[in-house]
Length: 124
Image (tube, rainbow, N blue to C red; front, side, top):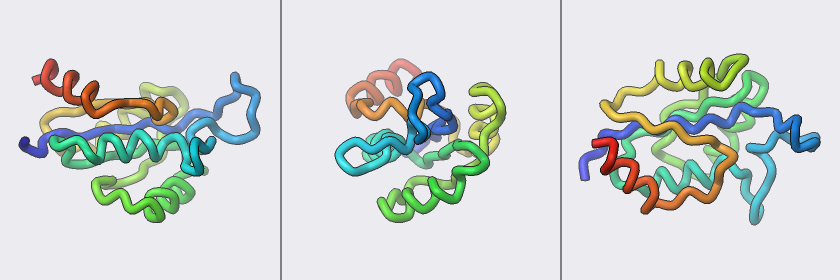
């Protein structure tokens, strides 16, 4: 499978509706932040060439640290998003260099490789 897919993982929310002090993307599931689970799944998908993580300006360094510690080699960069989700996606799109792009919400950790594959096939 050709590596021709850029993946933008948007992990910039605050989680205010949940009423937690911690941002949703940093809540842990089995000892790892939610956003890392999505990154790891997309990282195993054979067409993924690069992963761009978009987060809040105050969380860029924190995300970079988690990614470094988890050893996610396909993460190209972590960038600060905008005030609304569409602005954050746009910031990610500006970093994408592959002909195909998927956007995923970083607080949706249960994405399966077979679902990514089905979307990829339909997209092509």
